[in-house]
Amino acid sequence: MMFGLIPNCKDVTRMVSESMDRELPWGQRIKMRMHLGMCKYCSRFKRQLELLRKASQSLSAHPAEPVASSVLPQDVRDHIKKALREASSG
Amino acid sequence: MSENSIPPSDTEDRNDSPDNWVDLYGDALYRFALSRLKNRELAEEIVQETFVAALHAYKNYKGRSTLKTWLTGILKHKIIDHLRRKYRETPSDQVEAIADNTDELFNEKGGWSVRPAKWTVNPEKTYEQREFLDIFYQCLADLPDRLSQAFTLREIDGLDTEELCKEMDISPTNSWTILYRARMKLRRCLEVNWMKDFDEKVK
Image 1 (cartoon, each protein chain N blue to C red):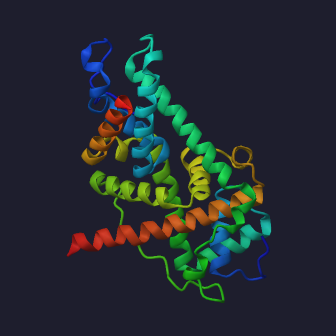
Image 2: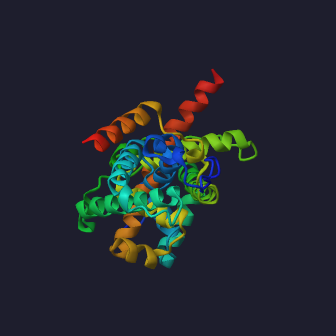
Image 3: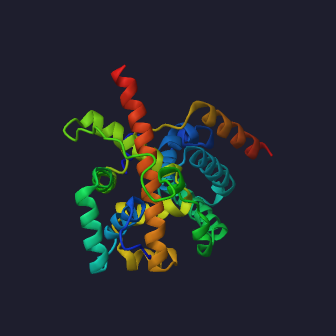
């Protein structure tokens, strides 16, 4: 990824994301930090990505949370029963 | 995942006849499918396919495993078949074709045009946290397949770049691009839906 001498907010969001997956080259790291020190919105963006990571980890700890309460909807149930009856009579 | 909400049926009895399959095992199979596929309609469809396939194969069922285990085995095959088909239809070299949302978020000079809003998530409140996670889960399910696959492998399964690239058959640079797009879309989806939810609660 090529960035200008002074990275803009869009560049910095990319750097922030990439820094969560690998160690950035030294120059990029410095530029990113300088920008984050001055830019409220990019700092907020960074905290939100960190929250996404934390939320993912709790999904991984409780993977079934939204799933555990799910039941097969009644209309689907009826539909499947009908398909089974047709399959067994046919 | 938890399967304890379904009464175990270890014994073969007449309740196990195909007429009762949907009522006895439908929910368990559905939850299993949902946890793998993360898409309700698709899970419903695959559960139906499973039951129909099971009916045709029932004469081969020897009762060596419980009926539930046998049905789950068929379901697993159906899910794997589906995923194979799906990823074959999305070759990895088309990854770059998945659009990003940076044009809506940044102006032509690369400054924010839609600034990140302040999120009010109080991690102390479990109720809020659960709701946040539910929205998060939905947003993740709505991502394009390759993005949600990459994000899940990286953030939920904790794979590093090398493992992720091997799993998805892509280059490291590609993986960072995909993860960037996934995070941008997820962040925005959460922002829109969480804030909407929050506003409604305040009203």
